[in-house]
Amino acid sequence: MQRFDQLYSEHVDAVRAYVRRRAPEDVVDDVVADVFLVCWRKLDDVPAQALPWLYAVARRTLANERRRSARRAHVPEDVSHEPEPVGDSVLAAAFAELSDADREVLRLVAWEGLSLREAARALECSPVACRVRYHRAKSRFASRLAAAASFRTEPRGVTR
Amino acid sequence: MRNDVIARLAAANPVPGPAPIHQPLRVRRLAVAAVVMAAIAVPAVAFGSRLAGVLGISNEGSTVPATSVLPGQSQLDQALQDMQVGSTMQYLGALDGVKFYAQRNADGKFCFAIDHYTEQYEKGVLCDLNADNFPSADVQAITFPRGLQGIAADGVATVELLDANGNVLDSTPVTNNLFVSEKRFEEGQAAYLVTLNAAGNVLSKQALP
Image (cartoon, rainbow over all chains, first blue to last red; front, side, top):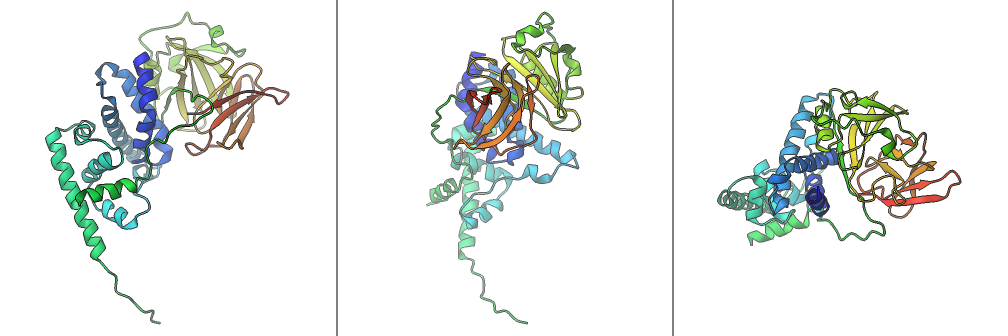
């Protein structure tokens, strides 16, 4: 109980921020609650570096939530909505063109501030696989950004 | 050069990292399971000896099996078991379409469940994990996040939600230790839960998580 209390107080803000970066506000409380229920249930499995483990639980919980919502026809599909990067529309557009896997590894590094080793734990893959995935994702992202920067719309007049 | 891409993405973070918290009051820790479509099964361990009186409020309710609290809600069933709530809860009554149940768990923490019985989704379980467990001098009420729906200590006549600037966002009366309001707020919008007695005097002001 004491360890759970400590884990909760130390990491609830980070877990909540993680979820808010990936889901609409109306599901955030439920997902965060579910993450810590899993943490409670599997307390003996939580490693010393708990945060990447909690992110992995949150990732699976979000995936379950999206599947559940997809089965409920009356629930708006925006439960799968992902908040976009803000203040940079070109970057947001390029980011949106990436695959889910590419976006996730980039988010873990850029938004959660994880090292590649920590990101590997959150993604539940090997550090080598994570490193490869990260560098490929970053290259694709940079390419799309460069393409967006070189693109210029032709001026158009208004005709009637 | 490529790291500029990551720096640029980091600068566009829609939810910047948790800022330093400067709160005049201690934020309470709660374990909440507000789940849609969930359920109750019979927990493995029974706590039938835990009587209603241990709730610490006048409304002792009537003892009901936990299986009857949120039937058909599998995740809430798991939540009740994980929170070690036991095999029975006290049914405290219904107010404005919400049924309230409460019990102390195996650690003596105050837990309660709500069931918006006319609706499909607003059902949940919440436990107060703090040392100064509800009800206590500092903790005169306990509510689910993002709105007023919870349980108040004896002597509390009204509960209010305040924003960070002290503006009243919502206010609702307490009936038989229970309170419900239909208003819901965005996360972080409500900063404090305030309790008042019948004379309008503030009894407690709790920072919300």
